[in-house]
Amino acid sequence: MSYFKRHIFFCLNERDSGKDSCAQQGAQAGFEHCKARVRDLGLADVGGVRVNKAGCLHRCAGGPVAVVYPDATWYTYVDQSDIDEIVDKHLKNGEVVERLVLPDNVGL
Image (tube, rainbow, N blue to C red; front, side, top):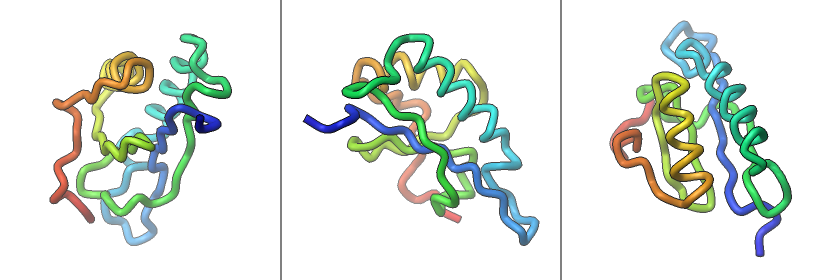
């Protein structure tokens, strides 16, 4: 068994070039909300879910973005209700939230 069942990484990168980046799209708030929600649901322990910060994940055009491993599922999100849905369905129950999946062709 893996140390954590799932990891979710939130891109918090801010691009110096002035181009769009996840940091400019509210990524920090999404990260903080996810971390609190996972903790409040009792999922933030060994064998559960780890919520991590990440630098650039190279998917800026879809920002803000997060990726869940080991499932390699990429998400985009708009608000706290989107984060709640990712936590409740995917992180807790393993069900991909199809409406929030970032299309494979979205990159920088």
